[in-house]
Length: 157
Image 1 (tube, rainbow, N blue to C red):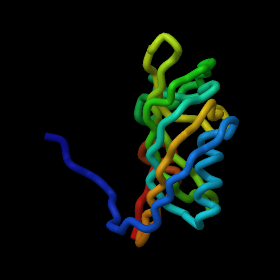
Image 2 (cartoon, rainbow, N blue to C red; image 1 turned 90 degrees about the vertical axis):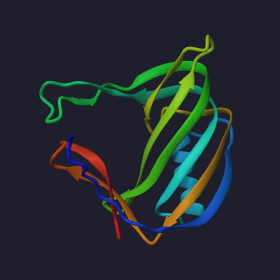
Image 3 (cartoon, rainbow, N blue to C red; image 1 turned 90 degrees about the horizontal axis):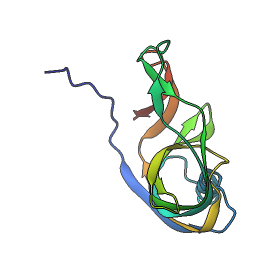
């Protein structure tokens, strides 16, 4: 059995913000704006809706990477795109907002795809309905991790 390893920090739920991103608004830029308006630095976000196009990445084998895999190129999907489900964390990285977000989507034929959503590549088509749950009492950072050679999630008290 493999060793169980983790890093955690226990906090509490703070403000809860329900929002709708309007047509043309990029998903991650919209989440950043909602958080800024409501003075939220750390949060959990859950949402769904539609995109006029999608841009995402997923892990691919990379022999040169420390863990044998890394994110590939940005994949682009023309619209309309049904945004079935998305979840992510709003963190800080070097004092700036950094959102780590994954989503599941489907195209006009119902073919499902998804991965790590990329800022500036997911404009709302009709709506993105979202709920932002502030996390208080902890810091949620994204920073370089030597072990994986990638930017990772670091929750701290």
